[in-house]
Image (cartoon, rainbow, N blue to C red):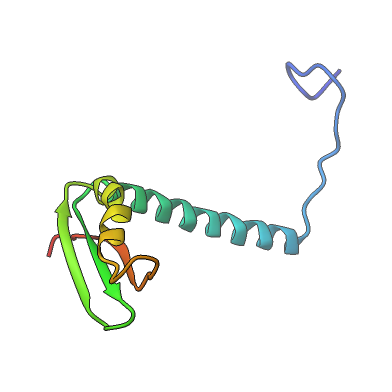
Length: 104
């Protein structure tokens, strides 16, 4: 008589993992959990208002434009705004990045 109730098929032996494998799996699971949480926070942050921060590497001047309703709205304007801020055609000294407006 079988000790396994409701089981059909072949039995596979259970192999206990080595302590090193278990520790490595735990570290990997923790790292994946942190990355997942960070990605979820970044995605949620994109739903809030953003500005564009534009810095000219020649002059050191930083300008800000916005706010835009969401990070996606700001991103949609970034390329055109950045192109319009360049000092002359063919020269790219101004770089714009997104920045969330966080409640203070």
